[in-house]
Amino acid sequence: MLSQLALIALSSVSLAFLALAIRLFRSAWGTERRAELFVGVFFAAIGAEVLAYGFTDREAGIGIALSVAVSSCAMLAFVRTVFRPNDRWALILSLVLGASISAVYIVPHLLGGPTPAIRILWSISRSTALLWSFFECARYYGLMRRRVALGLAEPVVANRFLLWSLWTAGTAMLPLSGLGLRLLALTGLVSDFTTTREPTAGAFIFAGMLFMSLSVAAISLALSFFPPTVYKNWITNRAAARQGA
Image (cartoon, rainbow, N blue to C red; front, side, top):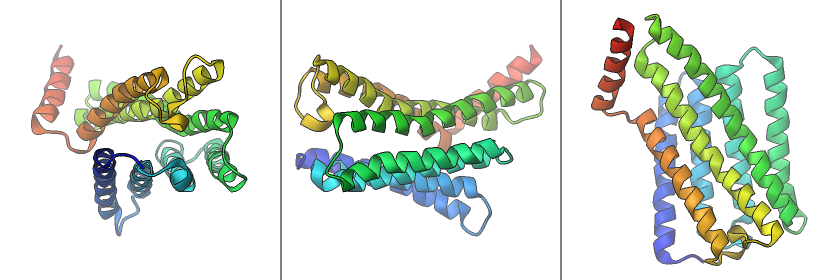
C-alpha cells in the first residue's frame, strides 16, 4: 500500500477527473451530443485508474486493466464520432484497436499475470488511441486556423482544438514514457519502476517524463474546459490583429 499522503494525492486527482466527467455527463444529458458523453466516460475511467494505483499491483491489476480498456475505447469512439463519422475505415480501425487494447490489458490478468513483453505491448497499444486523437485534433486545428484567418470560424473554438491536441499529446506521453522505461529495463540499464516501485534511476527517469507530460496535459486541459476571460480575450485579440495585418 502506498503511503497515506500518496493515497490522498491520488484520490484528489481521481475526484478531479470524476468531477469533470460528471460535468460532461450533465452537459450531454437529454441531447444527442455523443462526443461529450464519450469524453466523460474517458475521464471517469481515468479517474478510476488513478485511484487504483493506490493499491498493490495484485489488488489493482484487473481494475486498472478494465479502466484502461474503457478509457481507450471511449477515446476511440470520440475520435471516430467527431472527426471521421462517415469513414468506414475509421469505424473498423476503432473497433480493432479497442478490441486489441482490451485484450492486451485484460487477458494477461486472467492467465496468471503480465510478462515484461506484455507490459511493452501495454505501452504501445494504449498510446495508439491517444496518438490518433492527437493527430486528428492537430489536423483539425490547422483547418480551423485557416477558417479563422478568413473570418469563418471563432478564434476561441479553433484554439480549443489546439489545446485538445496538446493535452492528448501530453496524455499519450504517459504510456510512451512507460515504453521507454520498459525498453531500458530490458537492457538492464534501469529497473522498471512500474513493477519494482523502488527509487532507482528508472524511477527518476519515469518521474521526470511523467511530470513534464502531466504539466502540459493539465494546463491544456484546464484551458480547454475552464478558460479564463483574460485568456479568451488574448486569443480573440491576437486573431483580430492577424486579420487586420
